[in-house]
Image (tube, rainbow over all chains, first blue to last red; front, side):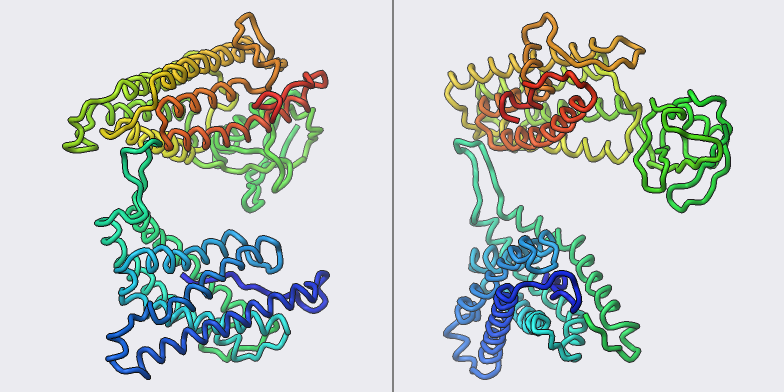
Length: 245
Length: 302
C-alpha cells in the first residue's frame, strides 16, 4: 500500500511557518527521493526494455535494483520521524503503518525469502511505486518552495486511481510467493522447545499481514478519493478548477 | 418542575417531563423519562447531560444539586444495547477455564500425535493455578463484588471475552505444549508460593473493599487495612487488589517461564495501572485527608 496522508507546507499567512532549516531539510529529502525513484524507474526501463533477454538471464531484477530499492524505500522511515516531530502535518500512526507495509515487502518478503525475490509481483510493485513516488515526492518538494504547477497537482490526485491497485496487487503477489517458502523453511520463526516456551510463525505472520490489506486498503484508497474531491473540485468529468493547497 | 428532554444526536425534542421534586436523583429521572416519553431509550441505555456534548450526569446527583429549574433542557444520548456487568464478568471468566482445560485435558485436539509425550509436573501445577484463579474470580463475581453501574454496552462483552479467551488460548498453547521446557523446580516452587500469596492478598482486598460499604448504603470512605495482615498493602497503595493481581500473573509467568504469560501479565499491568492512576486521582480529589504516602499501584514507585 502506498497511500500517504498529504504533507502540506503552511499556507501563506498561517501563524506558524517552518524554519528555513526545516524547509531545506524537507526539500532535500523529498528531492533526493525524486532522484532515487527516478533512478529505480530508469533501472526498470533498462532491465525490461533496453536490455535483451540474455541480460535478464544473467541477473535477476532484484539483484539489479536491490541497492537502490533498499536505500530509498527504507529511507521513508524518516517520514515517521518527520510526522512524529511535527515537521509535517501527517498523522504519525497512519504514516507509520504505510511506511511499514512497504518496508515489510522489501525487508520481510523480498530480502527474507528467495521466492519473494523472483515473484512476478516485484516488477509490478516497483513500477507502481516508482511512478507514484516520483509524483508524490515531487509534489511535496514543490510545495515547500510553493511552486506547484497544476499538472503536478492533477497527477498527484489522479494517478493513484490506477497505480495504487497495481501496487497492492504486486505487493500481495510478493507475499504470496514468500509465504509457502516461509512455511517450509521456518524462516524468521521460533519453535519449541526453548527456554522461553515461546513460538512465532513467520508464515502465520505473513498471512495476518496479507489479510490485513482487506480492511485497510479500501480505507486508504477512499481517503485519497476524498482528498481528490477536495483538491481538484467537482467530479473528474467536469473541468478541474485550480486550487491553492 | 418540568424539564424539556432532547435527543443528544440531533437536538430534536422528545417532549416534556414533570418531575415531582428537586430531590429526585438522576437515576430515577432516567426511569421517569422513559416512562413518560415512550420513544426515548430504555433507562439503562440513557446517558443524560446538560449540554449537547456535556459530561454524563451521575445517577446519584439530584436535580437540586445541579441547579436545575423548570424549563431547563436535558439531553439524552442512547448508549446502545446494554448487558449486565455480572453477566459479562461471568462470561469473561468462565471462558478461560474452558479454553485452558481443553489444551490441558485434550491435548491431542491441539497438538496431534505429539500429544502423547508425558506432561511435566510444572504443567500440572500451572493448570491448577489457572483453574484456582478463574474459579476464584467467578465466585467473587457471584458472592463478593457489588457493581456501581448495573449495565455496560453489549459491545464490551465481545471485546472483553476476546481479550480473556484469546490470551488464555495463547498462554495455554505454550504451557501445555508437548515440548514445554520447565524451569528448575526451586523456581517453580518459589513462584507457586508467591502466586498463592498474591491470590490470597487479592481476595483479602476484595473482601475489605466489599465491607467498606454495608449493603444498600452509598457512604464513601477511604479504604484501609482491616485485621487481615494481607490488607496492610493499603498503607502503601490505593489499589492493592491490582498490585496483587499483577504479582500473581508475574509469579505465574516465572513459574512457567513462558513468554506468552509475561505478555499477558504486561498487558494486564498496563490496563490496571491506568485504572489505578485514575482511581488514585479520584480518591485524592474526594478525600481531603487522603493518606499522602500512598501511591496508586506500585509501592513507592507509581
